[in-house]
Figure (cartoon, rainbow, N blue to C red):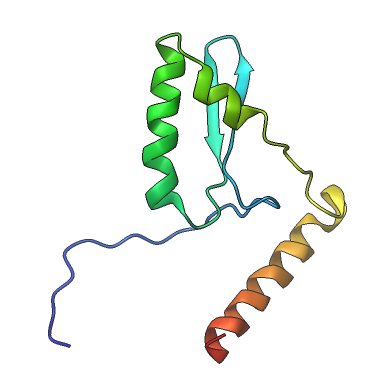
Length: 99
């Protein structure tokens, strides 16, 4: 109580089915990273370093992350929005119950 908060962050996050970040390439020298599954404070530092190494030509660690399987969203495009809403409600309920 009575503590000022100077900075805060809020926003959507991407929860992957494997709970691991997804990294890969879209084209030569175009890299992507997404889906830290709520662990972005930790993973973004690591993945940032891994992407930097790849940009400098050392793709050893990048390739290890890129080989992790990317699972498609269950239900496809038709059920993506309703399943996402149900998932958000589920985690909101868990938060309310303290589970």
